[in-house]
Length: 106
Image 1 (cartoon, rainbow, N blue to C red):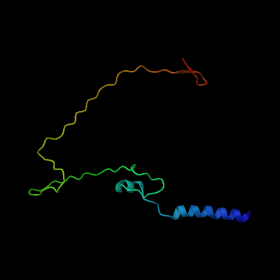
Image 2 (cartoon, rainbow, N blue to C red):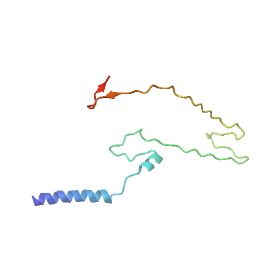
Image 3 (cartoon, helix red, strand yellow):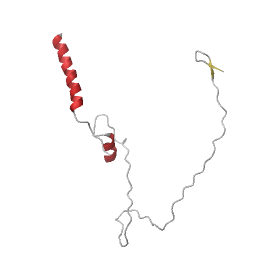
Image 4 (tube, rainbow, N blue to C red):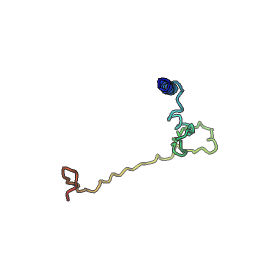
């Protein structure tokens, strides 16, 4: 009995030490930045969202944009955003009457 208890304790101690000593896997931030996951058993493809950063560069006179780059004319008018607030229709408050036991009284 003592031998079985010692073996169980040694296994538990080994599991705890292993979880502390093993370096952590890739963080969620690293997964979001790279768009790839470590391929663990619980990973499902397609659930990682990647936000692409847009880098704006102002070209000097005589420079041309690289192929495929979107060019924004600095003399073009700035886009206008119009926000219209519409009030919600007035709603009648709903009152639910119940008994002490929780049954709804009509």
